[in-house]
Image (cartoon, rainbow, N blue to C red; front, side, top):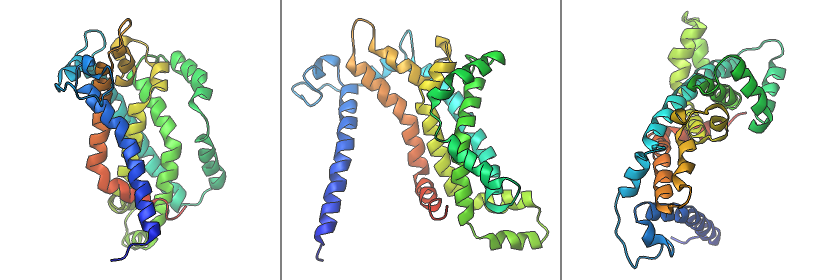
Amino acid sequence: MKLKKSTIIIHAIAWASALLWIIPLLGTLMASIRPYSEILHGWWDFAEFNPSLDNFLRALFDPDFPLARGLLNSLLVAIPATIIPMLIASLAGYGFARWSFPLKTYLFLTLVLLMSIPQQMIAVPIYRILLDIGLIDTFVGLILVHSAWGLPWIILFMRNYFSTLPIEVEEAARVDGASDFKIFYKIVIPMTLPALASVAVLQFMWVWNDFFLALLIIGTSENYLVTQRLPYLKGVYHFDHSLLAAGSMIVTVIPMLLFVVLQKYYIKGMIGWTVKG
């Protein structure tokens, strides 16, 4: 079978790009499973190679900032901060896709514009509002901020996906006497599982990897999320690259597992919502 020159070039570029992404990850992995003394001249130096899980155990159970507690704190924030905006945005996105109401276009345009606002611009107002209602240094405050921050893009995402679904199925159910809410949760939601999986992966990763909002709202070391604890592993007088590399690998494990589990639906959802906008 004869290959086109363009096909060969595209594959070469794709493999080169993949290699550029894999090399730093491989370097971090090699540094995380080896003693610091073995990587002084670079992780690619294999004159001595004694892999172990000691760095991972040290990072998880660090006496001052254990990542094990940080993982739990991050899960307590990331899970509800993913589920809450998904539920609200699904209802709102369905309303924008199927119903007509006054100022619909202007409201939707406002949501799109909200996506362009940087976090730094609203840091002070958010802090003062949470301080006034007593939610500074609480997981509830951080969950509410992440949920509100994720709503605009999730509504846009879900609205576009709902617009690609055949409306005839819903009309047939409505003729049979089904209510709007019954049509939504029994017919529409099962058809949008790929989109929901995509939203779950993206929102969870965003919340999990967030550092700025966590730094703004969470101030007690006991409540630090895993991203806040990671920088403290580098030490004060001694920078242990192996320990920090192990901590970095631990932080990435849960998002990677989530992506692997939902990969099939994630890809379908990402393709589906771009078909019609």
